[in-house]
Image (cartoon, rainbow, N blue to C red; front, side, top):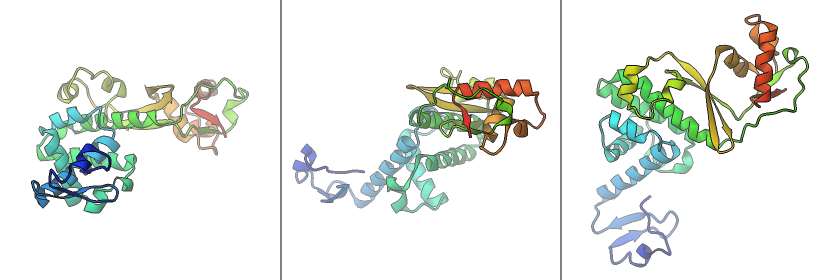
Length: 266
């Protein structure tokens, strides 16, 4: 928020700038001789939109590309986000401006909805899937850095993995994408338009997990994904695969997943 924090130089000289601020946290500016009420309100909403979309929404990795794609400047983009949240999503101003009301996972669908709204208004629906994939990738990458580390395990019972129940680690993320995630990771030097012209939305699911200070992001093969999606502690791999693959092939997948720390005995 626009604030005059006690102990700062601005606080000591606030009268010189004709600033009136709240005496309690968050010490927001409530009046200024040089700023009208409308200007202050606009600034408060811009600050709130920036905090939600950019900070809580983990947008540092994709913001520039998305703003360029929708042909807006950063300020008008964020002002539009605040307006869209209130007018199209029914979010009250008090909720919009209170960051304590929001969790990062609640921001992601708002980001996706707003970008879809802008692209449809510009009749650029063909760019939507690539744009949403980019947003989703950077969001989950940033969130994975805050997850507990998933460590390889050498200490697990290797006997009869086919007939026992397993649970998928709660610290991995399985994220669907419209494009192949490996193609998305190659777009460092491309903009979204070039990417969408070069690649086709063939679909993929990526595994995200943290190893040390790094994020592991891998495209999942179908059988491996089936295992990770269904290890809920109640079904054995024999139940999960239901004859779709051989026992030998299944046990190889299980041992690898367990060794990597992706699944654990239930």
